[in-house]
Length: 177
Length: 304
Image 1 (cartoon, helix red, strand yellow):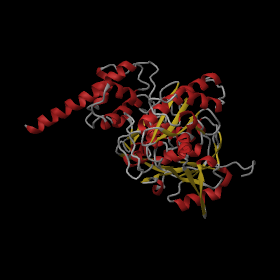
Image 2 (image 1 turned 90 degrees about the horizontal axis):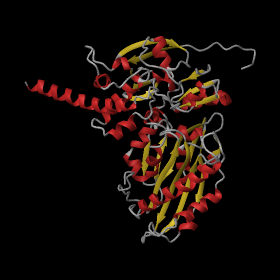
Image 3 (image 1 turned 90 degrees about the vertical axis):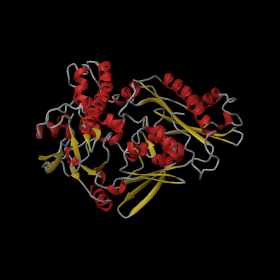
Image 4 (image 1 turned 135 degrees about the vertical axis):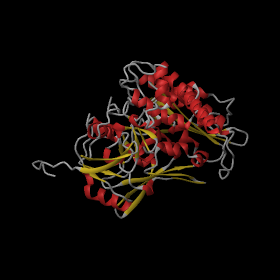
């Protein structure tokens, strides 16, 4: 490529499965997944903090696994199931156990970091439904809260595990009747 | 904090990827997990004209364990290698090092081969590959070569991968029987780059006397540094070893550079202390590893 040549930036039509809905967008390949979710798809629940993978605010779930939205390109996310914070609650509006726990335990102050914590913790509790406090701290170690509300966030993780069990027990009781 | 423009290539198999890399040559960069590359793009520290995304190459997404070691394909994520029980049984140092690579969320996306290709002297996997005497397989259109770890790393963020080449796999060989390993590091914050890290491998005989002791260092030199500390420990057991002799011997070969995170003196002190910790644990573990390397021990859990 010579210096005088002005390149026309490539644009690609992409299809993304976000929270169970097939969405389409036309993006440049350098479009970060976090920006695509926010600006192209209007899903502003995913927050953008540091944009180099340190703060964890943009964490989303890709095929169930938490990953940084700012360290993926939207074009690379095609063919995968993406879950954002908007996809955590049930269709009828019932909060996800992690969301309910954060509300009950004051796990958020300004709320900026919260979407990243919710996605990380929701995945963590599926892998480890009965964490110790130490395991809970390890699980959230990649997310920063600049209100430094970590004590209540740790409590929220443990409470979310309880709520999950409570709901399961209620469900089982309901089924038995 | 947005990446510069690039031309995107999304090959669906290895042949297509090598064609694409061959076509773009010097202007091309491979995108695997992107957990080092994308931050560099976002901060505009790198601006390749072409990115060849290998995330569609399912054929490179493997962790294959045989009695001789573990082969890791270019698309195997750190988390997959870390969780692989067969790999852990044969090369426990892999999991011991991987649990220290950034945070779990980064390990879900980042690839082990990618972090080796990135050749960051603070990267845990560079020390693991160097200590084990592993190798990298590099492919280009029409040719494949295997490069030993000692020839692979050329300098900070510099490997011997040439334009048009793709690192397709890494091989982590199994250590001899009665060899224990450990990986320790100290970082300012949990999950951050380590100011110093030490990987150790110690072999003992049937009387549990040390016959070989080797260490590899992170964040202390431009390329992973491997030291043989056998002279300071030979014939000793975990109970009679003079660990500080080994630390002194190691210290004589280390020339850390100061930076904003630590002075050279502090880094050297960390290296000596971590050398002792890593060697001691590795020696204790060695006693529990079967003498016959074809019968993998499963007792060498890191929680031990």
